[in-house]
Image (cartoon, rainbow, N blue to C red; front, side):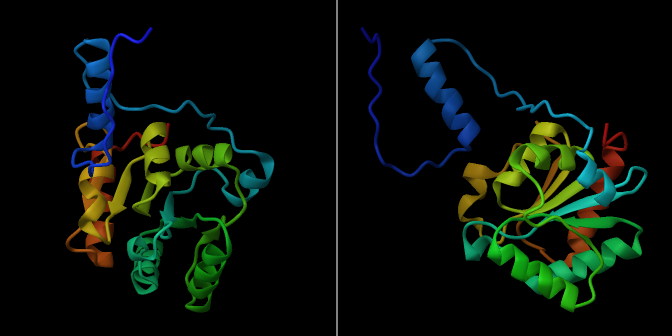
Length: 206
């Protein structure tokens, strides 16, 4: 028989989700709990088709611009500028995504003469974790891929194009190798944040 009853309400959650679930567990277990970083164990060994696309010894930066909500997506002009700046600095952008919208977005990038590795619809959920582990960092809109990257230890620059979800979903900068951007979302600032993050995490990937 249940020892506790916790009332569920549909009120808006105003604390980070990790804190929300910790507080829930505290109520259930009566045990002091503290946030710890989530870790995903994935192999660093890419499957053969991806090894051919991502040979070792290169500086890869993952790029994820699309989410499940148009308002959170990264504008195409920003992505074009970010890719061009990365290439100038000898990074190789790796565009990640799935579905028709991602295919159209990638095609638009190509039409604008952007140089990048196109991984749209080329990875499974398991494989994307391995790809991220082989990247020096990820630049991403507010999407689940951010949390996968955090879990495998890859530094992340996360861009919030709307501030409504920052408090709930932004990973804790004290727990993860992450830099949050929600004001100056220019390509210059994004790449500057990336390089500062990489300076602090020079051993990535491992």
